[in-house]
Length: 444
Image (cartoon, rainbow, N blue to C red):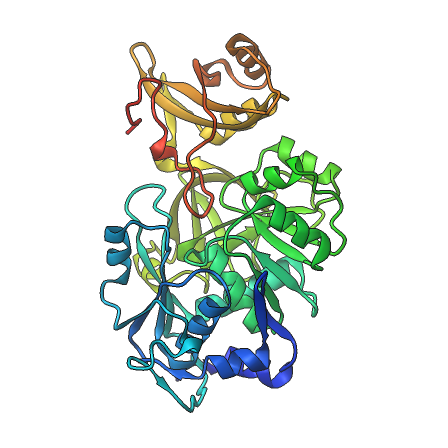
């Protein structure tokens, strides 16, 4: 028998019609208003691309898809035309104008939507990965994946009935879209910014009663640099996309910000492991109650109901190989890097994250990225791209000495390259493939 649950938006609108569902700096909608605005019949079972900026109109289009049984395909508007065309390929409809404006009246039907409920085995959305290790992949995520992910997140960090979750991540990626969907499941408020702007986010955390915010290490650092301190309503900042350095986590604690590290991936519908708020460790926390994690030959593997059907089908004995390297210590996950990014020097394996943590421990360093480069004697050696603090001053020899006190000799970087910024994907992950050698050649 196919498992079906009541429609999430329909249930939230019935229970809390006057509660804010989506807020943006330019306005918002209550659950009752969002239910009315999304009463649009879209082609059930067909892919519908949503090519709209993050905000109220995106939320309306998303929920119109979910209520109609159409498959939502969020489109990152920053993509080049050819890339956008690949994402939209196969879509029965591309929503590139607000549904509320009536501009798509010739392509969609406005009328009664029965809200028959959500078939947990049906595909709800197709998310394209950020492409850190190659061309982005299209991942089909079911209603069941999203529901289990929302329940797992709530049990990990708790759930405030008055939750106001600030989303500064792209809605075309799983970390951002999950905030909109899980807020509807909870019947709480998603506060959506079109993009990350340090001053706008700082004001929101200070003045808008934000209880949870999703950030990446880089954006957390920018907020701390801008003076973020003891935001009045914030109970935790969820930090994902990459491991945060111990130095950054200590800065956050000193500023009265509860930084909660999390590890996840698109194929597992966002979060897989998450720290308990208040935990002072530098790991990525315990698995969600509905997820299982193991380390096989150094690689992180995941199983459970949040894993996308395609991932579950290709998994060996039910375990999805993530391509990420890590270790479990007292049940808590520590992520050390990507298998494809492992540096092999003189036959020794070196995890870039370990080197980066050591380099970032120097007071003059804001960010660092370690890569391997061809070396005549060792096969590969470690090169580190370094972003200094605004007033940071340090020589290569000083950095090398600093690392020598924290790393085995074969892990100490042979070269340091100063850069103004590290390349990142739209979701904030380090785009290691885009790092260039000093002479301008791509590393790969």
